[in-house]
Length: 347
Image (cartoon, rainbow, N blue to C red):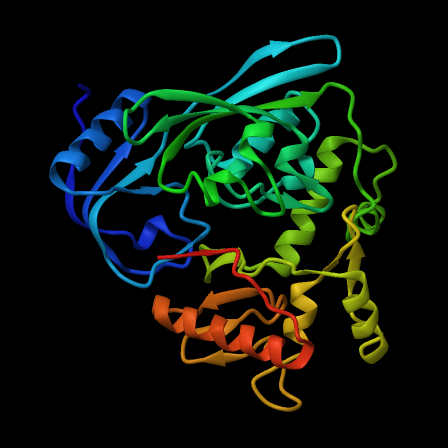
């Protein structure tokens, strides 16, 4: 058994991007499957069910963790296979996602440049099928390895078994608290297939004066867009988009369009329409004529540039942020008849 370092009463303030100063009864960081196995075994004997923590960018802590927090920091990025057109890149679950993107861009591997600057670690990417600007992780996903938390065996899962959906996978449902992802393998292209039609990428590329398209240029455009409208967690606590973009029937969308001609919606292949949660939030509010965008109560608030992002200005508690999110959900439901769902996990 690999020895692990256990820390008692560890503050998690710098292990979650909201900056919530909650405490773990026990804490350890693992950088290998053997260390992970040892930590799980220790928890099973001494601390009960463990809490697996990645980059902390998709979690809102509302209380202390009375058990063992295992920080998954398994490192490593390597090419494990390639052919004439594709390359398979494997990364440890603890690798920062943006570092993975930069590695692939540096080596000319295309497919995830639209996902630049998404916070968090590689291990979380398939859990919630991360996506941005017309690309989702499922589009380039090959397989992953995960440890069964009960028998400590390593399982290999392909895309079909993960059952990816919009910000969804089996890891958020049937497999929640059953597996710990240890590595992810992506199938990337040697010849780029650009996706610049979504959002403001094409316009940003034009503003940048880009004449010859490249994956580096696309990533730089995405980075400029994201930094322009999303707050840096190192400056102000947040977890990026707090809510999912809701899906409604085409009939519901057309009915809303009659009353709200400017409502933003995107037709999906399943016949439904995806609404922009940010638009719904911005066009509802805590009072008549008052928008949630830029709203602040104490240190909990909605970001001034993007209503989809809830922020901790300094000393808000997790429950302050949670209460604000519930008020926003109720407000959008009351005005539009649409129910928002949190993208961020609440503990």
